[in-house]
Image (cartoon, rainbow, N blue to C red; front, side):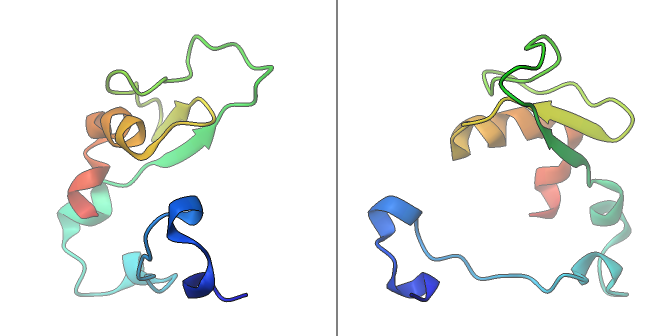
Length: 89
């Protein structure tokens, strides 16, 4: 079953995709290239201390942010605001 055929209430609204190399595109603004981070999803058995729960901005450490599993879109948006990476989205 193609993605477009799946129920929106379960899988969310249709999203257009980006080519995998869009960050290497020469037309990508330098600010957008610098604003990326690596998102690490914590495992349930991990110490919850460094894992952001989406109630506020996540701490960025060496280009990475750690998020708890199961965050919704609004929680991820809040957690990723600290890194500035949402400016490129």
